[in-house]
Length: 208
Image (cartoon, rainbow, N blue to C red; front, side, top):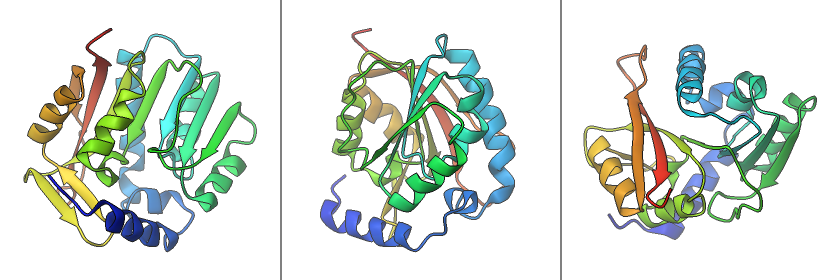
């Protein structure tokens, strides 16, 4: 589906510039889902990832997931985040851990080392279909965990933050078009009824 890419990016930048430097902002104000989000992410991670040396988190925000989950298992964590204020908060939270930071958009990031896992949560909604595929294509040799909101409609555009919530059918098709296979998938459980469903996908490139 075609979207005005440049205007989307400007709207999105303006939206995040107004958000507070808190975990609550990362959760869209739904603070009550934090624990179940982390708990089920941990189960999915341990079920599907075998090596725990270095992890890359794309769209890391204030480091909420890295602080509560990834630091328990990985020796080194790389965090990609566009907003400087969120990067600074991550550095404060994670100062005792072995972390590297890249203040840039996920579209700009180019990997220069091997990762044991790529974690992509709540960032695909801010990418066009083509940018989504471009992002995945940079990680053909690494297992990817994609965790994202799922809509009933194929594409649901939110004018407030320029996000695109896709249906499961669209993600299934898009992932295949990008050259990846879905090795495991499951819906997040224990969520309030008034928010989107959330789904995990474990992706591996067809060449692996």
